[in-house]
Image 1 (cartoon, each protein chain N blue to C red):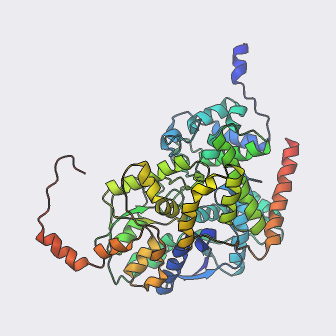
Image 2: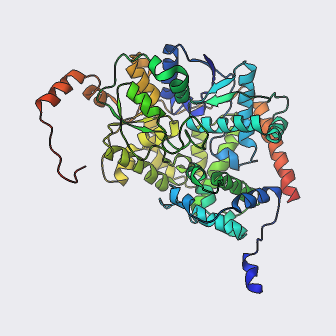
Image 3: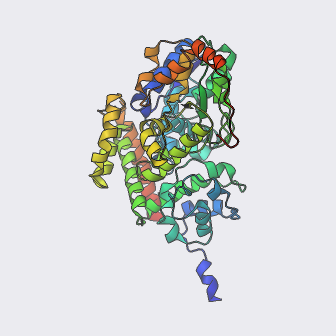
Length: 310
Length: 197
């Protein structure tokens, strides 16, 4: 199926590897064809709603929705969690509230806003449209224990494709890819991305908690679907470790990069080298050295844990 | 008789204020919002979300609109999803932020002042280019708050530069006039509302 593609600002700078890997995955999955929306504009992220006019986020999104409609598309794919949330909300509101639609039309002179396209996240499309069984897994990600970090805006506000408190779509996907999703309570906790510029300490404390719990759950990597979660957990990981007086050494990998790995796509298309905490030592230890690892595990009797030991 | 005077709602009414007061009127102070909030326990708020709800019900406009909380809400919707009264608390916070700006409330704490600078500059850049330009945002923000912090940002900036994660030049939309026009119309609409208030 064809989808209009809204990359969003961060896909061309801080999260370029997310964009690249998603496009590579989509090229391989024939059921998902992405056509970029020409001349798209910023969704307004978090600040838009408070500045200028409460109608600003709806109007910014409405321009993109209207261009996608002109392309003849009825569904848009937006990979950034903040863009996804803003545009999903706008699309829903514009289709359901005539008053809001009229206001957005007024702000956007000459734009057609009747029955605007629906906005979806690539995770939703991959799990629900393409289907897990249709993902060609060539190199299962054995040995990877993954904490699936959805972040706050992927499943909230309620009414999206998954449970707002305990979503499972990414976990199912990781299982299908041969990795082992861990059980942890921080799946949808906020990383503090929206306030990190002006309230650094607080947002670092929030992000550090995410990594502390991921580590405690036994994960050796975190899968993310939001450019900002990735930036905070990856780029600032040494600072976060300092705050909690520990080491994490936890690669923060976009779920699309993990899909590309399992599907055996060309490494150059996945942008793994752009992650600050390098995933290569971990991959060499697990996915690539899978045979040796199993032999070692067999040779070494399982160590008994003491009571209370994590 | 006079002791009730203190809790009589004192908001100057406007449709925008009425929307907020109406939404919050059903709050029964269970505290689920404060318990779900990731920012409050990390020390980011002066009033917890529950307290803000109560202050709105009591009509204590100055305290609400000059609070740090309205600026440091991370808009993660944890409270909105859990509220047993179905209040979209995140939406209320955003509306309060907007109101604080329109009415020109002074930001009392340092963090609130910085939050305001960041938010306003972010949208200024989007107004000009139609997309965000991170480098300018970071430079503007630090020059307006504490230029010495730029030195502290240097290692992070270098790391991003080496990983090609830093956009050096803005990447504007082609139809900048349309985006600017949209901003202009919304701004004049807001100014009209402001005059009415």
